[in-house]
Length: 265
Image 1: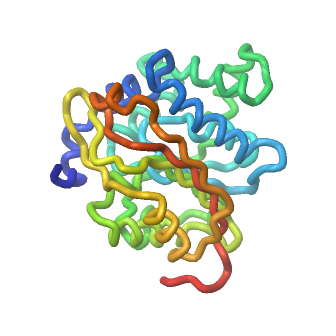
Image 2: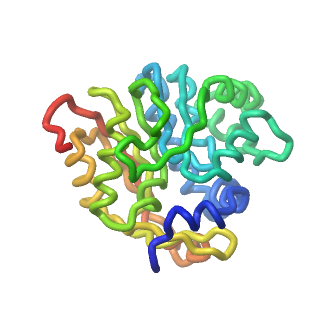
């Protein structure tokens, strides 16, 4: 399908419908979502990545990528391109009754972390207190958060952002280099994405994705000056059962470390 540009996202992306389709437990996508939640805990849990500043690039209207990270980082910056996604996230931060209900996801993360499900409200409140900013972000710009100045991050997370923002592999590589400028040398990148994905659906509207394979992802990351520490791939079972939401072949979860030399930009 044709590339979905930023104007289409600004005019027609339905944040609540996206959350209902992709961030709700009790569907055929539970295993996919729980794979990400478990990997996030493994990454940010005991003995994992920690630091002072974490920046989430392309947070969307979601919070799940930050639920384990908030135990290891005291200062988190969220960001997204679309106004409606940032507004939906701000509703949750303000505990607005119209905000999306994340309680089941938060309870599940508490279980994964070995805590009582009853601790979910405490977990939510902790994350609310740690997200310091919600910024406009454009990964196609050399400074994705321009004009806002932020401290160098100890960790970047980006989840299902780059493959939707980039029309070809060259722009995907460039966007990785752009976001890498926000990360201090020796810091970590956590990249969550899809392989073989050409579209996803939100309320009957199709949005394009850049179809990637493992070699393309690994090549783009190493070219940007990282050492890949791990990459786990979850094949999508019964792919035909998901064609009404997306056509991805697999999800991947990658952790890489930014080196201090041999950068290509």
